[in-house]
Image (cartoon, rainbow, N blue to C red; front, side):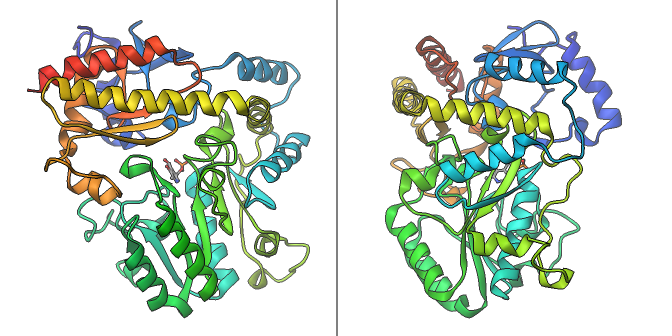
Amino acid sequence: MFYPDNNSQSYKLYQRAAQVMPGGVSHNLRFNAPYPVYYKRGRGAYFEDVDGNRFLDFWMGHYANILGHAPDLICRRLAELLADGVMHSGLVSQYEVQLAELVCELVPAAEQVRFCATGTEASMYAVRLARAYTGRDMIIKIEGGWHGANSDLMLAVSNPYDQPESMGLWPELNQYVVPLRFNDSQTAWEIIKKYGDRLAAVIMEPVVGVGGFIPAEPEFLAVIRQETERCGALLIFDEIISGFRVALGGAQELLGVVPDVVLLGKVLGAGLTVAAIAGKKQIMALADFHQQHNKWERVALGGGTYSCNPLAMAAGLQLVGYLKEHRNTVYPRLAAAGDWLRSAIVKAFAGKGVEAVCTGTGSLFMTHFPLQPGLKIKSPYDSNCLTDVHKREKVLKGLLLTKGIYVMHGGGAISTAHTQEDLEKLVAAMEEAAGEMQ
Ligand SMILES: Cc1ncc(COP(=O)(O)O)c(C=O)c1O
């Protein structure tokens, strides 16, 4: 066992970090007790920590690394560009134009794009754009849905949903943002009807990350698409996880429903900082400062120092170009690996007498331990309130770390670098962990 080890470099780094960073980290998810392992480098399905330990990784850079860690394709391109003097410039570059063209070609809802650096920014712009376009104030979001640390949407994110997500938020937020349970078609219909003439947008992940990458049921999506159209509200798909991951065109391609606005990030940046807001031209045009000279007649979208960093744009272009060229192999292969893994995990736990449910779409998977037998997980509420979250987040994660496997939320993302042997290694470790949990 090489973790935990109080003589390790990771342990020592964490002691120092805790002195100079609140909680020792800059992203709470990256902490795990008793201390996080400090990354040194990665290749393919594995990363190495500062103590030289190798971990089989399923976190894959917050699910961004669809080709695994540091794929040659991206490393070579970055090396070429750096050697050529391409770095942050604050100028426009050919790469942003090419990437925007590619996004518009591949993502059904995208007619125009604005790039930014993080998904948090993209979701903040989306709310602003929807309110400006419709002249209305209300937003419906999914209960348990995470759209980044955007103050506009920091409502009903984590259990208990009726408590504030943070100090420092507007107490009035719940006058303007209404949570909706995922896959609850009847309530969707009722609340869209109720807020109809005040409703600016429904924002949702069509494959909801927090609940376990659960796809929206056809009826739920149909009700939301139809009713938002009927009342003149926008439908915003947050595809920051699912974009270029569950299908080349994202969940909107997979599920066959096209939103008005889409948010992209993670895979799009090929491991560098890229996110985007895209949508119909007539909506995105509100950000066009050539058409609207008065600031109060246009929408402020974008403006970040590092937005459209040419290295990040070129990396995204390289990756999305690759995914386009190999779409007929990459996505079916990832989906088959996901299907195999999900059922193998459930069987491994069942073999040890532990009931587990493994949800997911394509290459994304999450393992849950239901509090009541036979639970069907259809929403973040089910996953966060009706399962043993401590077992998933702490016990399973800790046990797998001691076996050299890094998961997040009891699962993660398969990349094209994971082999069948890697998947079997995870299943064997889960089986062992199941025995140790008893
Ligand atoms: C669905 C979704 N939207 C938005 C975000 C925020 O993106 P970022 O972390 O780049 O700010 C995330 C991040 O995990 C996400 O999963």
